[in-house]
Image 1: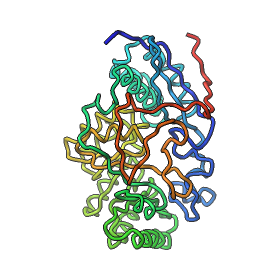
Image 2 (image 1 turned 180 degrees about the vertical axis):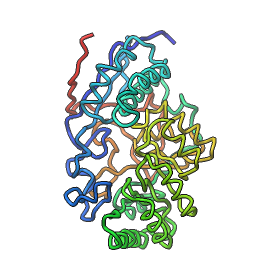
Image 3 (image 1 turned 135 degrees about the vertical axis):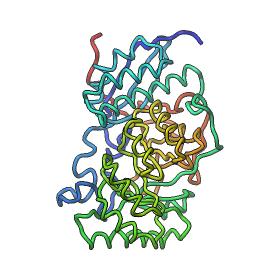
Image 4 (image 1 turned 120 degrees about the vertical axis):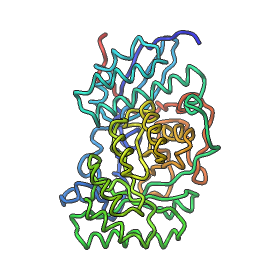
Length: 397
């Protein structure tokens, strides 16, 4: 392979809702629902109705391009808006431009350790993830191989999906193996809210039948006593798992949940970051399935490390969202039984591209399954015709 160097890295804010890596940045909010969605902000009446009511979508999606001396451009999407773009353009640039794009581990390690004083979670890791995913795309273009071939190849012919949204019954008819929907009430709503949560899932169980995997998304909104009580209240309904019941840093709390309700599948990891964050969850066996988001946790480079650690404990990895980025990973991992499709439509009656109109050729579920192509990199071609990309920070180097 001929020697190439990276000559530029460009980071753009995507100035339009409805597409890109920020799942919540939708024109009509995150699902149009008449019922509530429980969040850690549910104790405050003015922020009770939806996740976007308290501004979770304000950061906006980003697009990263990394260009080589022979004109190839690796592309990714992520989130973090202008602050993430600043970190990439003004700080991380020194670790990227002029380097061989095949030196992924070196670039990742330098970005990671150089940004520790920004914080160990959240924004700096979003920025690292976006760069890492663009580098993997670029490497695939250089080698003319899809990412999944470069990390070991497929262990299955296609990927089974469960669908996250507000209509698991519609997902079942479309061929998905399961459906995950949010709980509606938090501990702030006391017993009346707990009863409403149970009734919400009982009604859906009646619609989907006894054999469909029905999951509950708690989105960090519960405490240990409430989560235990909810698990027992839902037992007869047959909920497949309770996801992210507690604050992601409450490792001891997750251990208590597993001790007090050992028969329930407890899952978490959507809001966890890097192998350091996942190590304690894995070693303590506090959760039954881990759910890292490849656009948040440090990119594919770090997800592979997290996955290897989980495999040593026989803990399944079912990534959170992320469309093609998760598909390329999960098809290579024997301990990843299925994948999430995050439904971003307003009513969940259709199954649109995860990233909206951002890419020309995003693969869509067919009968609840995904079959990957051999297109190089992530196989995603940016559709610039209708995207409002704003490069706020341009390096003067």
